Length: 108
Image 1 (cartoon, helix red, strand yellow):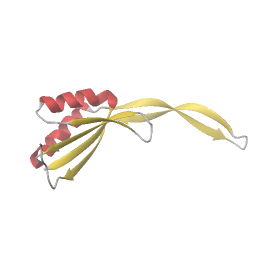
Image 2: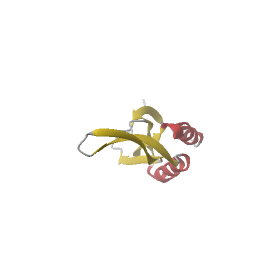
Image 3: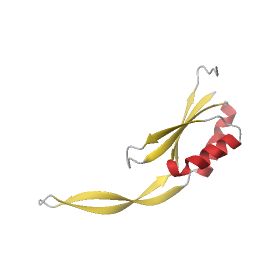
Image 4: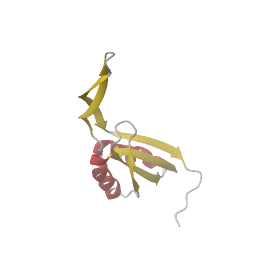
């Protein structure tokens, strides 16, 4: 068995959860916050059979879309120390997926 941990953008989380449960996968959902943009994410955890790893990753990939987003950024110019705020375009969305071996699994 494997433990799949998938971190997805909160905007994609409902679609990911619906698709996983529709295909019969049990999933635990927790709210999380990213360190770079400090925005909302959702972390999904699920225990699956080894042969289900690729199908689960495929489902997550189909439902987790990357998109461009403008985020505020600040920069100092010269020795004056004046800071200017300007938007920077970054890619958000997609998914970060970690797959680990499970040594023991019990559902009580």
